[in-house]
View (tube, rainbow, N blue to C red):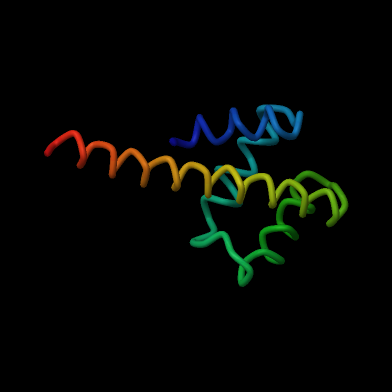
Length: 88
């Protein structure tokens, strides 16, 4: 899953504009080394400030992004094991 895929998935799940989704992924998530509990408040704060929305709305967006990224990682792992089975 590349940035464009993530942005498109975020657009579908949030109904935010492409511009806002791009800002979130490129400027906020891209600058954060890890999505996780340690960075959650920082990222939520940045999303809230960038889009001028409440922390609650920003947290919903954060959770959606985390879900998209986790699904992408799971899909890559599944594909890795599928390709290893077909190599045998």
